Length: 227
Image (cartoon, one colour):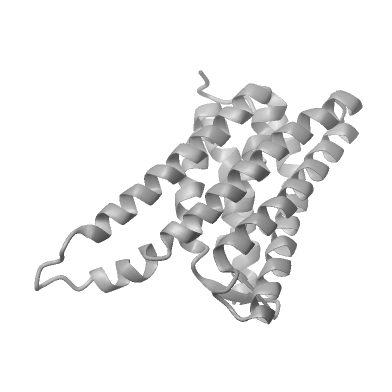
C-alpha cells in the first residue's frame, strides 16, 4: 500500500505544481511553496516503510518544491526563484512561532486534542529548524547551480535536462544531509538514522528524476493569470 501511495503522491504533487502554475502563474507557485513548507513539516514527523526501506512521509511533497524553483528559474529568472525561497523561509518562521504559541494555551477540562497537538507540535522546533536550515541551503544552491549550468549550456532541450537534474540532485543531497542530521541525529538508533539519511535522499532523487518531464511541460504552459 505504501508503495502505491508513494507513486501516487509523486504524480499528484508534481501535477499539482503544474495545475497551480497554469491557473495562477508565478503567484500559484509561491502559494504552493507556502503550502508545501507547512504540510511537509508535519508529514516529516511520520516514519514509514517504502519498498522495505525506512524513510519519512514528507519527502515527496518537499522534493516537489524544487520543481517550483526550477520553473521559476526557467520562466521568470533567478530573482523570482530566489523570492520563492524567501517566502518559504518566512512561512517556516511563522509556522514555528504559531505552533509554539498554540501549545502555550492551557486547555480546559473538556479538551481532548491537546495531547495530540503536543505530540506533533512538540517536535516542531527541532524539525522545523532543521527544515529551515536545509531549505535555505539547498534551495539557494539549487537556484545558483541552475543558472550556473544554464549559462554554460544555453536554452536548449538537452541543456534543460542537464541543469534541472544536476542542480536538483546536488541540492537535494545537501538538504538531506543538513536536515536529517539536525532533525534526527540522536533521536533514532544509529542504524535507523543512517537508513533514514540514505533512503530520504534516494526517494528525493527519484522525485527529482521524475519531475523533469513536468518541467518540460511547464515551458509550454501559458498561465491564465500572471502578475
